[in-house]
Length: 385
Ligand SMILES: [Zn+2]
Image (cartoon, rainbow, N blue to C red; front, side, top):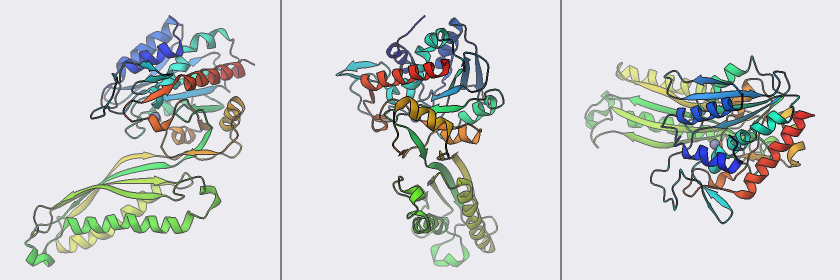
């Protein structure tokens, strides 16, 4: 069975693969589609077996090929004012509307629709498809797949097909998400010196975010290597906080969430370490008043940034294929840094505009779909030489 890129996109969008759902129906479809073309694929499931990555090799089993990376999950549509059914690709005014058309089922759909062409092209070096789960909730799936692929797949380049309007994106910030729970000790506020207010402790921890960010700004905003980033420093932000029960009771609990966006040149792990050190300091202080108190930290997500490579093979290849020689960075996180950590030269380049991603009435223009098809056809040609 052959599909055009548009038909394949309609197939993929029809699977309601919102991150909270299983992506297995989509994976099963891709698996049997590839099998019908004589291409075997490899599942790399999560621990519960409810979701899976899938990777496959098309062409000869040798080094030097290219990995095309896409995530299969999409963000929710709940509460969004869609004009069309988000899970039915609807063409209107040169645009294809549907959840995941831009972010990022189109890139994978194009690759899948071109598998018959890849098979007929007489590839000298392989194309590897790498489809992940749970990208939208902290890039949780890809690391397992990369670990499985790295010893077997010696690719010259990884192309992460997130929507960049087919521009070559060579770096982006990383993300560290944290949940902090401060456990205080309740007393009447008139005896505040005998209690531990979780709210007050949390306030000091939130302030640490502000102070660290101010230091970052002073330290890195003038560095030319960061000039493409807006803002040109690592940001720390507390987006939600909840704690306390009454004006006159020292709060027993306070919980808040943190979002840290690290410059690719910085290590998110170091922020975590610095935060843990300050937490330990406050904990010691709290426990001199009441030993049962404490602070728990949970790491929600830890996604490395995409580092600009020096003379990177992926960047060179994709610049050659797109003709784009300008410098671009993006504000969102991708799996690119995880592929780099796996030893692969990696670049981000894909059809569609991130401006439409995650929003109601997400769309991909037909022009971008066609640009994506032409790009992958040039890649097939390149690998057949
Ligand atoms: Zn995406």
